[in-house]
Image (cartoon, rainbow, N blue to C red):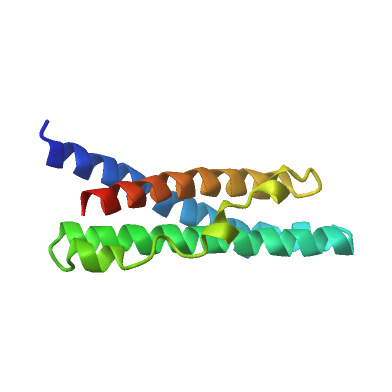
Amino acid sequence: MTAIAAETAFFGKTYGEAVDLLLVARDYLAHDEPGERRALMPTQRLAMCSETLRLTARLTQIMAWLLAQRAVHSGELSREKALGDEPLAALDVCMDGEAEEDRDLPPRLVDLLGRSRRLYVRVTRLDELARRMA
């Protein structure tokens, strides 16, 4: 397998994982999260709202980066333009994970937060690698 083929396969797997996670998160936030939130105490609701925003921020940053890289692979965008001047936005917000350890959050949200954080870390590493190669 050539280096380009291996890179494309890895990218495709990461992209597919991101889309799958995005769909699972969408379904959770649309259907299950409102009921789970209503069952919590006010301080727990606040923490849950904060963490759902963190989840959304991570997924937004991940998908924006992956779509830009997809445009590079298809020749629609230069690698330099796709990478821009700055690494992934909202790094401080997306990398914070202390509240994910909070046992007062619903287990499904904790799982989504963990999965999104791991994927965000992977995409951050890919961004760093792409910047070194550029």
